[in-house]
Amino acid sequence: MDELFFPEHERVYLVEFATSMAIGLLIGLERERHPAAKAGLRTFALVAMFGTLASVLSDKVQTPWLLISGLLLTGIMMISSYRDKREKQKDPGTTTIAAILICYGLGALVWYEESILAVMLAIITTILLYFKTELQGISQNLSRKDLISILQFAVLSFIILPILPDKDYGPFNAFNPYQIWLMIVLISGISLAGYIALRFVGQRHGAVLLGVLGGLVSSTATTMVFTRHNGDKPDLINTAVIVILLANLVVLVRLALITEIISPTIFPYLTPILGGGLFLGLIASVFRWREFSQQQAVPMPDTKNPTEISIAVRFGLLYAAVLFLSGWLSEIAGNSGLYAVAIISGLTNVDAITLSSLRLYEMGQLEIIEVVIAITLGVIANLIFKLGLIFFTGNIVLAKRCFLGTIATIIGLVGAFFLASHLAYF
Image 1: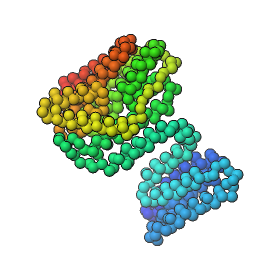
Image 2: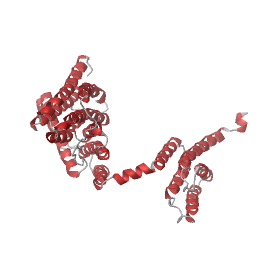
Image 3: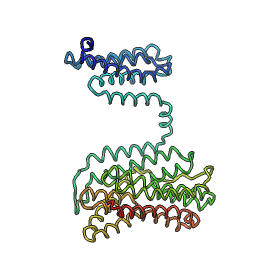
């Protein structure tokens, strides 16, 4: 009986038209809140179903012109509705017109068996429409320097990267222009996210967030800034301890993220080691939290734009050099050569030894245990270097207060590694 009244192909039609209507209602629900908008719930729902209907008819008569004509007709209809009162309305209606056209396209997309994509795009469209004020605020708060940072990252990612050859050159196949630049894009992207967030946050949300974002951009730069400021303002010392310790701990999270992206095979082996350092480091930081005052004014880390071409090239050269030295010394001196490079390079840039070790593993030149040890040594060397940096700037009091958290992190790294080795984890 059901088959008599609702054949199978018609049931498919009903489901797809219902999906289209739901998409239109979702977008229309947001537009209904704006009095100046000429389209609301009913209009958007009807336009979405019109897109699906036009797609059905186009398929039936085997011509795309019905679908294209429906899009043109929808656009003309919406433009005409705003034309007569365009001078009286503060809102010229361009956003609503664009939303209507997208809604029509989503309705068509549903018919072509892309319902999940259509629903996702409908949600994104609604979010963009709803957060108009917030998006305007972000664009107005972006400085010229911020826009340059975004454009420079776009150049690094979408202009330079695609034209580089993805071939291995030189001894040990260490020089692959595409892979080297891809690592630059990865590090620059993570750093840029923290850099932009740091610019927006400023001093408004205190030292904790500054420490986290400073660690994403550059933990070394953050350490130097707060060490230097504490020489002039001893009352900031407790705040500086929290910022520096958190920035160093965020580096561990950052390295885990990089490992997951570059070499998912290494991730489950390295994460427990980094997690051990993070766990003990957080416990040690809690002891300093009791002395921390959220009301203190904190200086902004004077970090450089991580997407500047000069910075990107310098990192690329460093990464290539570490990659070559790691492969070369590992070949002639075994593990001791690799670990020496890890310690030396980790003093200034732990990202380089991490990326180079992961790259050598993917090339089949290193074992998992060697990669984990090299990265762990690089992290420990980096932590010791930053602690020494605080000591040698003359701020002994700050160094003593950072000592517990730094040593706890190192003990966590070493302890987790030996525990994993004892359990034959590698």
